[in-house]
Length: 94
Image 1 (tube, rainbow, N blue to C red):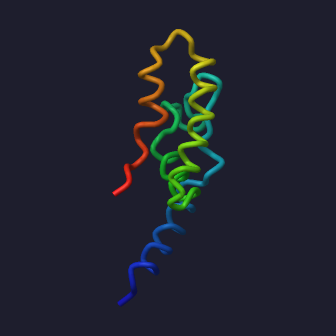
Image 2 (cartoon, rainbow, N blue to C red; image 1 turned 90 degrees about the vertical axis):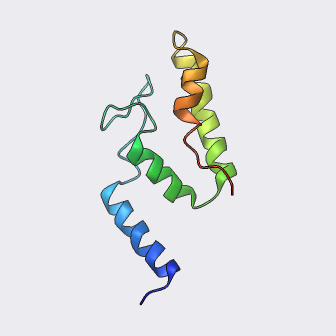
């Protein structure tokens, strides 16, 4: 029987193999370069959560920079939709 930390490390290694971090990056229109879904797509979200390893403030600051760029790049789209796409998926603190 393995402990929860060993189980988490094993799941993290498997997720990194399935979803490499550099593959799912945004285009100028904030769609994923790899799969075409609105960025951050599912694999990008997983890669960001794994990459920031619980640093919620750092992740939110990183996404805030992308939010600013997206608001400038997509002036025709409603700002609430852009905020929802980029920020609202981040898990809340417990």
